[in-house]
Length: 138
Length: 129
Image (tube, rainbow over all chains, first blue to last red; front, top):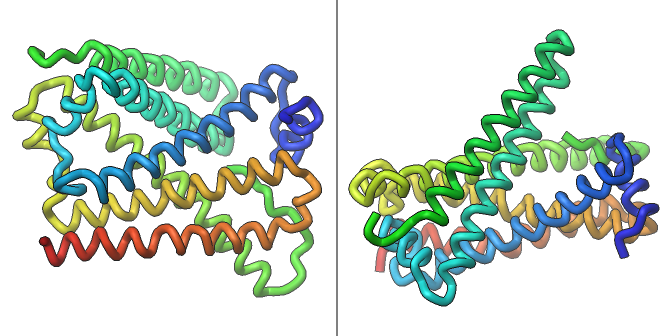
């Protein structure tokens, strides 16, 4: 269904360049982002209308109870971590978009991009430590 | 930001709709980014303790945080609908000729899903049961 022609056409429409692997990565990134957005919408609607206290019930107990659920705990943790990763990707995209239009030297732009990658990586690792390392006794 | 509306502009109405739609896409992406930043903030607070989390997180019993959350929900919903629309158009390239119609359909779907949700959430805020 998703073949080379589709990916290349989509990339051309948006002015994306790169080798085939990068274009596939970009396209699948969009597919995953769309799926995550729908999952997020579903989880928020569930929170609004099926959580006993609705949105007002969002507190430490609610989140940690989800995380420590024996059946769904791993899925909730994985979902929360994926949202952090997605946030880092979106944040990076916005910064890179701004950097591209900034009137800076190429070296400064490359340094900023490297710094963004490092900060993003640290955020993802720290979030993983908090989410997957969480225990009730903590 | 992707510029996907490069079709010939036929009338001022069409131009204004597509311009507004492009702006909506930008706002939606920014909103998703802000929501995910809020999510990260909550994760970090959980890393400290329950007292710190309950003290520093947004109190959704108050109307203002609830309205902020609702606005971010609107952005996420619009982003989900719009990104699905673009994926469908990419997977079925012959549908690109219906690009403007697809934008209109996206707006209608967004309104159908968002307005009832928003009414219920706001009723819950101002008329607690």
